[in-house]
Image 1: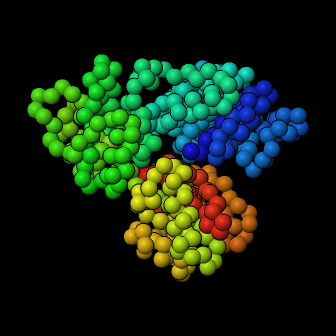
Image 2: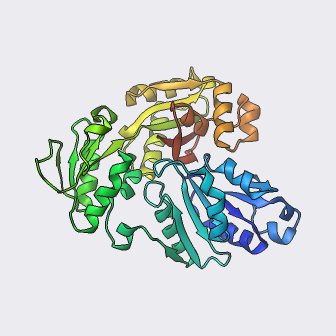
Image 3: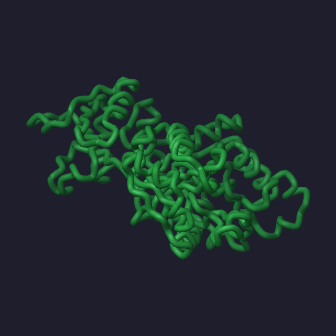
Length: 367
């Protein structure tokens, strides 16, 4: 996930640097501009391209909040609460927010613990830093697998939002959900194997038994959804989200090479390649035979986007650009921007730009 790390003090910046080194995909640092000219502070940070200086914290947080999947703050929790409070929209849309003290002793999952992944991020950072994770969501405290907690990991969105609490409350009193799988899921076998591996019993989708007080969780594609008013209070849908693949490649790359890169990219996020809903790239690659053939073999649509469309996505998400790529084709970010452009709405990155010997791939979930 794209992560923004904020710090305010010299000690906080040192901790932020440690946080960044713990994240597999790296992170972008938001630091007070007054420290940029202080060598002893900046020397341990390294990559200057990943640093965003700010003069005031509030505007910097306002800009980053809709652009990143996760925000990590190395500062007092009270400061963070005041910064993010006016920006909150929904537990299904807000980014994960995690807070650390400057010594890196405690890692607090503050916001979007389940759907946004803040609980997992807090545990990851705590393990890497030797810190104590602070997790307060009830199901996690009780060691229970709440459906909305693992849904995001599998590219699923809980719906309706108002039913999440009822299902999790039932779970807390040991009324375990009944899981059902729609026959129209893109990768139904994958979900079945995952549920079985995690000892969650499931059955084929069918009407719930009349009068049953056992919660029902249905994994389904968007086309299967009834109106929200027709969903019983104890029923929660986990809706299949589209996975978009942005692809960049050198001239003359074979379809086999591109498909291998896509398969490996999907493997890294624990998904089968069949989960990809659409591919995207730059209009410059519109005649690239290997890319066209790869899309044909996957039986997925392939969209080519203009420089203006890619630049708009870069600006909207604050994506980093490569000076070399920009000089070569006129736009500095292809695969991440193309993944964004595949969606008609917002996205959350599942895999940032990853290089595979001549092919770059980025994966993003549509929201």
